[in-house]
Length: 267
Ligand SMILES: Cc1cc2nc3c(=O)[nH]c(=O)nc-3n(C[C@H](O)[C@H](O)[C@H](O)COP(=O)(O)OP(=O)(O)OC[C@H]3O[C@@H](n4cnc5c(N)ncnc54)[C@H](O)[C@@H]3O)c2cc1C
Image (cartoon, protein in one colour):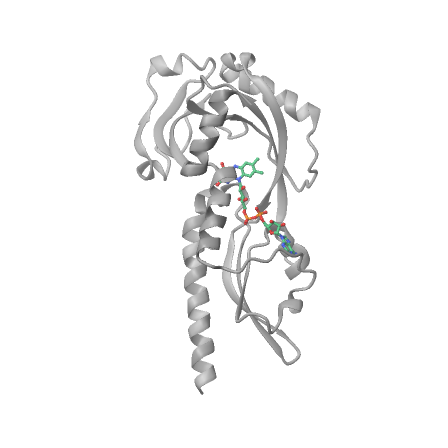
């Protein structure tokens, strides 16, 4: 590991779970939705100037804005530490059948994503495969995304993520050389300096997709047995973006269910 990497790693351990991201979104043709519905949620949203667009050949239109970028590889361990320091008891296990949890908890929160197909018989949830390439290119500071969302360059705290693919109903977790080649060519066409970057790894993930997110309470019944489940899954490619708002809604449903338990116990 290079010396500067060690220094960055140390800083990451302190607090870098999210950082400010300056972002360009470029289009070959002006998009239909103009401005997009989220324009007021980001900082300094504006159309790109002709000078800025000249850096992206073949693209005639673009947005420029500043927003927050959350880096899950740092953020999730940070959240885990928060739970541990709040003395939350953590257990890791594969749940074969939801009824195996019966009697152990007042409320079960289901965040199993694609696992909800096997666990709850939800046929609406399906994988959208995403492959990316990780590269080292420390000179890149701006996020670039091409309008269709299939091509993106996301500089992170240390490495740069080049994407991507969106392959519906496909759960293949191994990287595919053809996909990597396509990603590489598209990203280098967008930002040619990437050709000088050092390739680190290929990664594949599955977006747990659904026509709409399932965020609701369900009272399950099996004979005389009852179980309260709060579902929260099906976020597709925007689970990180939406996680805090969804978690707040889940917490409200859990609190409401617990109040119900206490009230019925008093009767
Ligand atoms: C390439 C790629 C790029 C992405 N980019 C973005 C982005 O820029 N912005 C954004 O907001 N989102 C992005 N996403 C999407 C985001 O990663 C997902 O929306 C998010 O991870 C969904 O989180 P989740 O916890 O609901 O599901 P998951 O992350 O799928 O987690 C579900 C968990 O449940 C566990 N599980 C399943 N079944 C069982 C069982 N029976 N028993 C016990 N455990 C079980 C699984 O092991 C897993 O740990 C991207 C995804 C990919 C693949």
